[in-house]
Amino acid sequence: MGLIHKQFLSGNRIYGCSGCKTHLATKDGVMSTAFQGQHGRAYLFQTVVNVIEGPPQDRPMTTGLHTVRDIKCCECYQVIGWRYVKAYNEDQRYKEGRYILEKELLIVVS
Ligand SMILES: [Zn+2]
Image 1 (tube, rainbow, N blue to C red):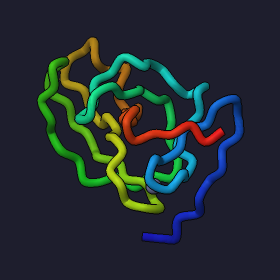
Image 2: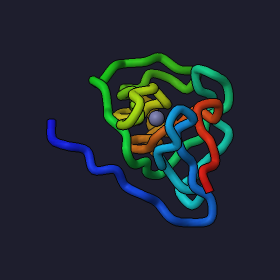
Image 3: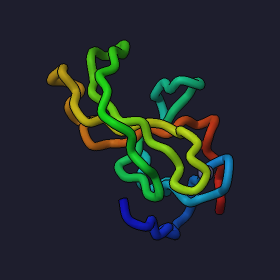
């Protein structure tokens, strides 16, 4: 594993880690705000930065079986959501490669 160079985002609204304010995503990258995480409401993002991915795991969800990787903040290692690797149901395929961040674990940085 190499060194992680933190990226700084710019835009209208930047979401950061609630633990350390590391930039994670922007409002422009939000695909949906109607997802369910482990801690309640969660957002689906097109892309997320400054995270470390865990090993792939199969996880049954209300929308069917998915392979996901948990994602952690690269600064404080708090688990803040997951990335969809594979969706087994055809109509869930749009989520592949996308990220879920828990609303509870996000703060608006700017
Ligand atoms: Zn953090």
